[in-house]
Each structure stands twice: as C-alpha cells, then as structure tokens.
Image (cartoon, one colour):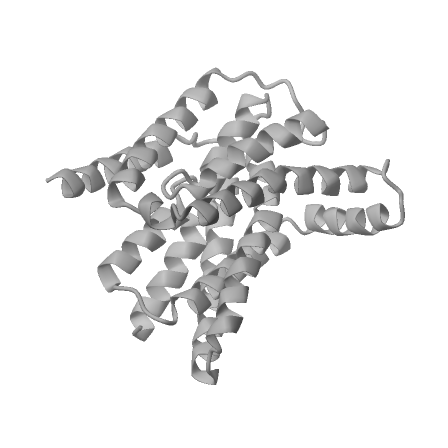
Length: 268
C-alpha cells in the first residue's frame, strides 16, 4: 500500500467513523478499488484505535466518568451515576458482540460486504435517520437512559455490523427514537462508539497477532492511526459545532446519492 493510499485510508476512516455515512462502507469500497493485502488487518486496527482516541479526548469528561464507573462497579458501588453510565454502555455493547459472533459463525462476512448490500443499506437507513429525526419527540435527557433503553440502543447498534448501515448513523437514529434531542443523541452515539470500537479493535488485534506483523508494518500502522486521529478530531469538531444549525439532512442526501451510484454500478 502506497503512502498516499495509507493516508487516504486513515482520512476516510477518521472522517466517516463518526459522521452518519458508514465508515465500513467507505473502507470496503476503498479495498475493492485498491485491492486487498496482508497488511489490511493491521491498518484497520490502527485507524480504528486512532479514531476512537479522538472520541475519548474530545469527550474527555464523559470518558473519565465512564472510567470511574468501571472502578465503582469493581468496588460494588453500583448506584453511582458513573457506575450507571458504564453499566449502560456495557449493556448496549453486548448485542453488537453477540450479533458479530453469529455473523462469523454463519460465514456471512463476505456476503454482507457485497456492493448491492452496501448500496441498499446506505439508502434505506439514511431515509430512516431522516424520518425519525423529523418525527421523534425530544422528551429524554442524556443521563436518563434506563436499562431497557440501554438494551434498545444495543439492538440498534448491532445493525451497524451490516456495511452501509453506519454505527454512528444507526445509534443516532436509535437515540432520537427513544426521545433524545439531536445533540444528546449524537453525544450518546459517540460514547457508545468507545466500547464498540475497542471490541472491534480487539478482534482485529487478535488476527494481527496471529499474522506476526513486521516492524515496517507496525510503523505504517502507527502513521495510519495518527492520521485517523487528526481526521476524526476534525470531523467531531465540525459536526458538534454545526449540529444545532444543520440537521442530518446533508448526510442523508449524501448517503442516498452514494447508495444510488453503487446500485447503478452493481446492477449495471
């Protein structure tokens, strides 16, 4: 993989991971255009970790609260607000892990990466985001998500394992559906990305360890992670800054346009 392609991979991952336009779809398309290689797993680990580090730093107050929640749960302090936050984040991640195990066990990975699947999911779930954002009530505050709501968010998030759905897009959709206003829904989506992406990165890291990567590949992975961190930070800053003035409609239009293009290519 050339340095330019490496840079492009990191920028695409960093930007699309947190915008509701599906990073997995864009990475799958990049791999289809550029071809696949032995270093893909290492680079995917690097760009995922780089982008999630941007979330942890940007939402440092919430990330710190979740970290304190882990300590509280280990000490048996289950009723603190931090423990409740951590517990709900864990519960909302479990369906993602279970659904991922089913996909691997059934051997559906390659079928789900089909360009036709990506095209349709880009369109269908883009329209779903637009519709729910328009009609959903705004009656729930961000800290007020119960165990039931955490499990519902987990079921929404599990759909993100289908390329084209978009993890951020589907969790924002789910958060808006349970009554969170736009900014709180986006913030919750970003917090959910931390355990979800760490879980994905752990699976990829296991594959990487089995591949016995060389020193040169590790350096390239480090640069990819750094580029992804910068791109993700910029994307987060822009999205959160303009969220109150710009709805999700521009992202939905982009999803529909790209999905339509992919379907034309697939069926043409």
